[in-house]
Length: 465
Image (cartoon, rainbow, N blue to C red):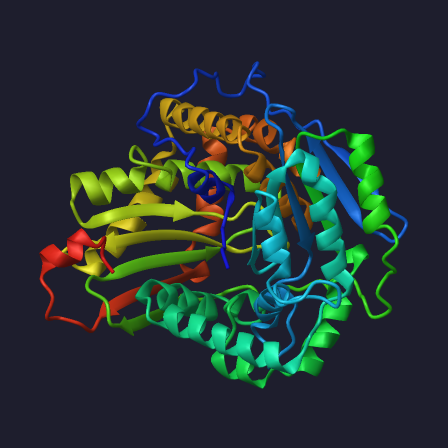
């Protein structure tokens, strides 16, 4: 299971994110330039409701296919938290046509690779393979959309695997920390629950529960196939229609209900005690997603506060005051519902979490009161534009961006991403900071280490925990 919070994190994972201190493409902020992202996407909708997004690129004889289901931990019923992730595991246990491990063996014998990931909003399955094997992976994915074999032996075995994954998860202080801050920041929305699920919920899930979940959500009208690579659009559509087009709609499928989080009126605080070596501080603010006109300014705020080594938080907490080993910001632009804008700091050996927290808040207040300089704004925008364009060299990450944006609401928001940022002004950045980063909208978490017998040197070498 892999989870990525935002567009910046996707670029980091691609190995294409440039530190803001590094040289970047010369782009004038606020103007139209030759720096454009090629989104020559063909959208196709089948009669059964399934969508396909096709982005041809013949630069290499390979193709990436991802099938996205609009179901994640957001959609789970109380008492069944972890179902979406558990079902992701079961999707590799075989179908009535292809037994256990056969799917993986076929892909590997044909020189391909595959995997899957579950998040709050979606579950996705992907393959990388030579382009002349496209029909093979289409047929395999279509088969397990409708023919999954849910048998007790495999179900019990996979439940043990999920429990072990959960135990490994609990052994990581960072996982426990972020899980707890979400559980406190949200009071109503299911984003408060961990994607991997609560142990007691996973244990209580039955085959009958999973069969109902599978039949409801793993249906063509809830799926989007994304293809990026070396293929002809008409031929790819014909293959998709041949294998997916004949799958009937689910009689139990229902569109996602609208979910809201109650407005936060007062500060929330928590201390997470864990077997860690150094403290960690995070401050979260409820903020809107891409559907809001404030979202582009929040993207710029994230970059200016915490987007690399020249960002304000890094310069203040890491370089100037040496309070932290790392500091930054994280904002989720693409999601079904609004998430949290985070500020964070990995406290340095011998330093206090309270001092790091104070410095984070001081930098926010300074930005609100004194604003953002034109040079600082232009540098942040140049790097976002360069990172976005460079990431387009990857078939995998173009497919990931297309799928995530489609699940969030509309893949076309990718076309408007850079143009929207170019319309933001430095004044807009200060305005949204003041609007959303108020005391009453704040949830603060501090990781309190319980292990005291390790040297600061050892802690520093491991990055804090």
